[in-house]
Image (tube, helix red, strand yellow):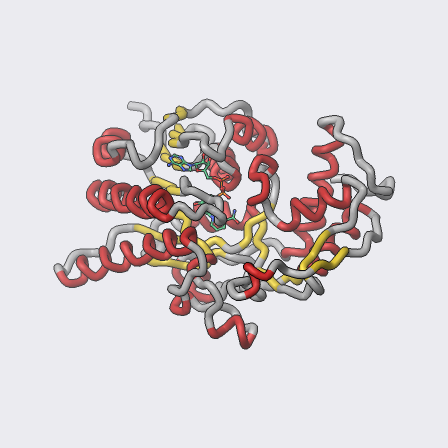
Length: 352
Ligand SMILES: NC(=O)c1ccc[n+]([C@@H]2O[C@H](COP(=O)([O-])OP(=O)(O)OC[C@H]3O[C@@H](n4cnc5c(N)ncnc54)[C@H](O)[C@@H]3O)[C@@H](O)[C@H]2O)c1
């Protein structure tokens, strides 16, 4: 008898990272059936089409469940499909969303249902947490990478909703330990600042690399808060996808892990990478950070990736600068393909 097709569920699969993940699952396992659960509030069918195209896997042939994760009945869904893994990426991703009730019920409450369904059915679950769970820990003063234990003082309700997901998992694990049960295969990944192909539809929530590249291609100067020395852990989407898939494999130690590049890039360095990619030499235009942002702004973020290497066996493959150069050229080629005007004097050699 033929082996049944491996099944995966990807929530938020029509979003930026989710669509890249879906395409990579299809590339690695051409016979797999991927179920995407997405209500399309920030995602689009076009992300899936384009991600499959970029990955060269042919058209998407999975199933789309256009459902709100908070309305889906998770236990029968998971028990019915018995996926090889559930990747839970759906969330309100607008960090400027201040409706706290909406944020917590969508991001945190739904996660608890998914956690219960997966743990109950013995299905591995990997979910997207965030570097926003850290806020500005002591390490940001000393500019040293953040160990997972330093999270817990997020500075917006988005970060808080992600922090509470990690807390729910911790509580679940404590209960298992108390009852002498093995820990379920559940891994939370604190993604840092993710950039790469597929974020075109994220609007203001797209990465700095995206915005600064487009500002240059629009003929302007890249706009940075004074004086561009802020440092962030910018991580290429390919590395995030690899880490996410690795976290679902056998032998992984359940828990919450950082998922970044493990390196910092200053905003000025991002502009340097873009100028190198496009053959331009545009100087940044510096402006004052708005007063309201000053108290809570993250001037430094960096993932300590040592536990991720041990527990998941994942090490980032891309240097952020190399990935930014590649990505800026991708943005240029994409704009040219779509016939959008290029108003910067790019060099003839700037090719994806
Ligand atoms: N992009 C980053 O830099 C970054 C950093 C940290 C964490 N994350 C996390 O990674 C995940 C993916 O983020 P992204 O950047 O791809 O964002 P995205 O907005 O492109 O993707 C989120 C997807 O979830 C879907 N969605 C939202 N609420 C839903 C709901 N209630 N029911 C069903 N679908 C819903 C959206 O339609 C969208 O397709 C999110 O959980 C986000 O919080 C992203």
